[in-house]
Image (tube, rainbow over all chains, first blue to last red; front, side):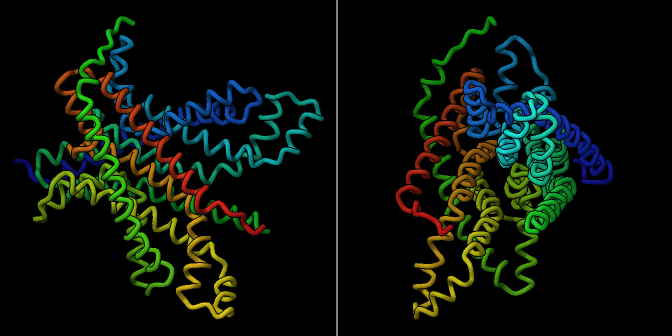
Length: 217
Length: 223
């Protein structure tokens, strides 16, 4: 039996790069999807509103773990074999899209309607109106909750361990099975997540306070 | 797409799925009640407790909110028994859920307490209401109303994230699904049905919470 030593410590620490990579993929893909969802939810087109609402309802109303299973086991149904990397990436992107989309919808709707009317009066079409008038203003409001949501994304990647993707949690399980020292192993795993998430939480809280102070003026 | 869907095995197992659903609901409700008790104590400690108690509560909240539920679950199920505490997967799952919800609910309850303006409490005392009357008539209902949406959506989030306890083979709905999967190999069919059950649960509970709100807390706010 192995004991927990420096190589085991390094094995878990190194797996953190997969957690970070998966988080970044989920966040980048989720940002694109989230923007589509947010624009769909605030669209003037009833069909786009409805479709985006159903998408959000499904992904916010079911467990992330099962979304992961469905993508992982759904691949073979469609005739493609997905490795855990791709399955986890797709599921996390879809899930993040739904949550970021809802957050950003609120931010877009917080922009006074007069801005839209003014853009109309200036003859701006939808694309220019969104790009030059609405979204830059919404971006400012959206920043703190988005940073806060990144914490959820990082934590969500831990579920990829269950379908066998070797990120931090899975690396912890592997080392624990070899060394039977769960207390050290899972404390270390928790500490790595904490080191990734806590700065983001602090940053989000700081941004929120500054924004509240700016709005109170 | 040449996949041959076979739902027969899944629907044949409906008593198991029903039982798993019930255990998921039961776990979530129990964890919520116990978690709220933890949260009330922590919210009190955080708003009006002594400084060391405030530090402990803050550390607890930050630790729980910045680590994944799955890792917390592994900690309770694998690490604590190494210290000599023996318990079942079900008990470990429940405790992990209570500890997790407690941290999130503490912040919600604290916000609720702080949402009642001090002047209203002083006004109540000036009207010669007793302390418990002030709490019952002035603090409780507006505070509950203020936190109701956050609290109920936290419950639904907890219920959905409880699917994770299947990783230690507790006996919840997702664990039942995982067992069925290993017996019948109809993975996709099983998980799509179970996902549908979770969606139905989430919709049903949010409808129930809206109904309760209409019934009890739907009064006009001072503007």
